[in-house]
Image (cartoon, rainbow, N blue to C red; front, side):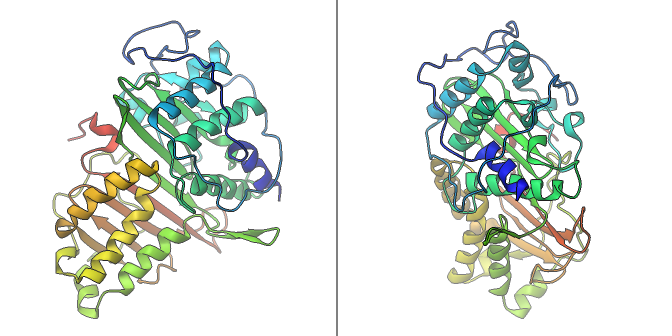
Length: 384
């Protein structure tokens, strides 16, 4: 299938490395010329105007269990600098932007291109540049199956499947930006996404300060190519379904929301709008086994980030389970448009929504968003 080949050209294959990549350590707020890899050019959504268009070259179908490298922050910075070394001055100016609220929140689940996103569009990159761009995303995300880098690869492949029917979709329509200069000292963000994905990883002084918001969607929810079936959000779906199936009838009644929910509540442009009051069933009322099902469900989202960050974050969310709530609307099978489930804790916020397909209304569309009450965008902005 051509769609899978195109996605593999973007995110498959071996890790690009450049041991001689220049180190970028400048302060994100400092000014420099666009030709300097450490420059940060102010930007607003829609300011990116790629001047060339080059489709990714085909290769092999997306492999099963293509995983991230599990590297350190310094490796992410090295990969970022190696990518910058492949770009000309104008391209660097598209990639290196200021870490402002406007740039950080410029993500969407719409096919709105550069009008709602910042960064450089993947379809404008050469094969070498695409390989280097992929290396950045790979180095920064998790190594699990159907999570982290593996999930990202499959989501882009699903977008190429949609692109065979509607040309406004495709893995080439994704954007990569560095908000602030990539560095192991200072604050910056890896900003990557398109209509079915938003990755926002914020780094501060060599550590991951925030791994959210993370948006993931998929349509079709599964497909088969060359005898292999791909279903990038199936683990998340099954984790939420198992969590709900573990509840008694009385507990389900307490967890059910009074109003139906047809989409994620805290999607794009809804930053900081967490409800004042938590709804649903308190996890503190559940047995140890039921609480484990909640934690198992949370794990699938936390593992979008690199392995070290995921382990630390999951430990925090586990300690907060007694103050966490679960809720749902629709059916608990999560197989009908309008089915919805939420996990809301002191830190964690996860939503999973089932909708009718956008391109093919005879199929379903899964959408999910993972946020953190305190560390969205590294906690750098106040939305109250």
